[in-house]
Image (tube, rainbow, N blue to C red; front, side):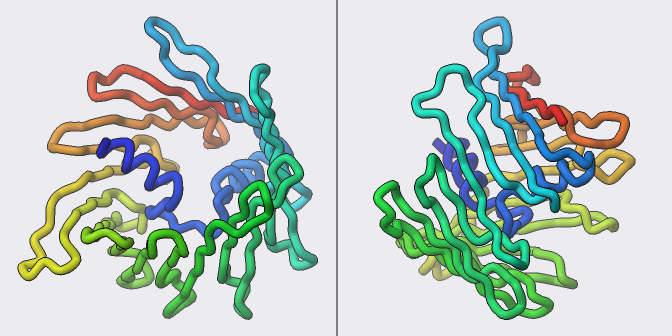
Length: 263
């Protein structure tokens, strides 16, 4: 359950980057390749061989901002189509899924993301996430209306060095970040503790280590739940240093999941 909790956590809130735009990485890939469409294909190991599990088409506008996502799977019930909307200043303001509103964004006077509201299929708001900023426009906190979920960030020399995550439970999570001389994130460690702990005793939760290639692009990512590697991700780039593949390896160093990108 611990590994599942970690994976869900990073899908919902990518702590390492705190990107305001969920699709920033895929947009950067499109811009780098001057491509208005990228196909992402996922494969999973089944007994002896890999089988395709998903295929997604990302489409981009003339500014390489994501404009739509289409489910290309042959069998899907229902197929998912997402459309993204921008204002006159080319800022993302909302999105639809299968012609139903799913989220709306608002910004402050500095053009920084202020709120994100999520909607269910009936058009009812189910969650509101609020963002606050501090010195040098650094993201200071994220607060969700669900379970009083919140993240508080601490910075040193404009680098995120610690995030404290709390909700309605008695526990809190602290994630610490370390960087190399190039300001690349090289490690993050997570610890759990009780909010009202008198001695502030912490318990190790997980650790992630990052390695980079000579072009300063991430090449390997290692996940630890103990002193041993729990799983590893290997990134592969083409001659233009564009990401074309990443694969997940288990603790036995066997590939169990692969994602490829076609430009």
